[in-house]
Length: 205
Ligand SMILES: [Zn+2]
Image (cartoon, rainbow, N blue to C red; front, side, top):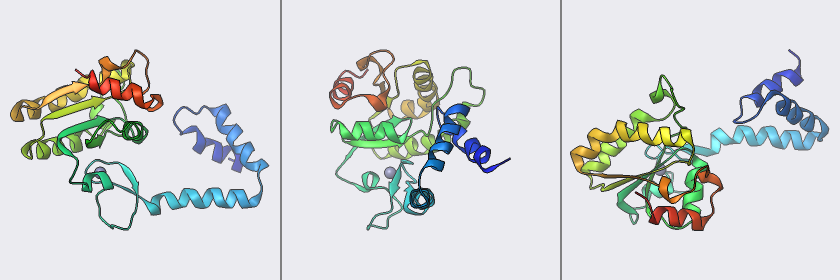
């Protein structure tokens, strides 16, 4: 395989990128100068060095001055410990934080559960979520909000998580709700504006 095909294979693994787009990315890089390419490859390498994965919410966050294994949100004791919001990806978390309408803690699933998926627990951080909700349940957690996009995969993820957590929500009397009914059909959470998210949170059920 030549260098063009090799790099195109890597781009093909990106979410939503097909073989033709992958090739376009490679030819775009070839059109840029050496300085850009050096900067580009250095930035890729820096990701793993400078960005950590929080062991509590599993959010990616920059290694900051606090040198704590936990991210700034999980470290923040002024946040509302009675509320946990579950989102699919880091971009969804960013959209919710930007809306300034939620003050509790988070959990990043790391994906969604496709319909008819045979091994749903391999698509998301199921084991980690179960462990965290048990721990937070004992610490006074009162509500879990699942914030997934309003599409079949988002609904399926909601239902899977509801079933997965039902022993914990029952044991600790935790309310389980979703943003779904506050958002219109087809809404992608990551592209929702702050007012839409604020309203969806208010109308959660
Ligand atoms: Zn965290």
